[in-house]
Image 1 (cartoon, rainbow, N blue to C red):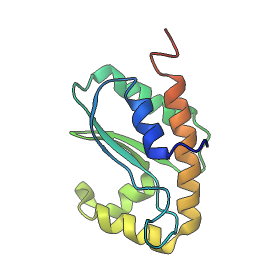
Image 2: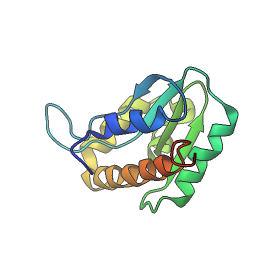
Image 3: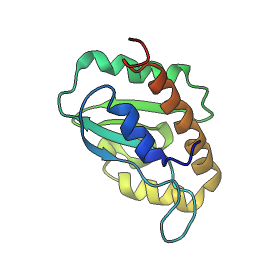
Amino acid sequence: MSSKSRNKRAKEILSHFGEVVWFRSPTEQHPIHGHLQVAFIGWRFAEPREELKSVFEQALQVAPTDAEWTFRSERNWMILPTRLLHEAGPGARDFIEAVATITRTDQTFCATTAEDLEKILSAIDAASPDKNA
C-alpha cells in the first residue's frame, strides 16, 4: 500500500462511482493503543444507483481474500467481514461491541482483514468507470 491512508484511498475510489456523503471505517491502527483494528468500510452515496451494487458484489468475488466478506446495501452500504456481521447479532445491534471485541481479542484476524480490504479496494478501483472509459 502507498503512504496514502486506507480511508483516504477508499473514499477516493468510491467517489468514482458517485458523491460520497457519509463514510465510516476505522483507522488501520487504534489511535491510542496502537493495535490493528478490524477492517471494514461503510458509506452512503448522495444518489445511490441500483446498478452499482453488482460492482461491489463482483469485487468481493474476484478479490483474493482470506476471510469471508459481505456487501450490504441498505441505507448505508458496507463491505465488512462476514464474521463481524455474525458477531454483531440480528440487525447488527451489537456492531460497535463486536468491532471492539474482535479488535481486542484477534489481532491475526484484524491483520487479515486489513490485507483483504486492500485487495477488495483494488478490485473496486479496477471496475471504476474512469478505468473502463
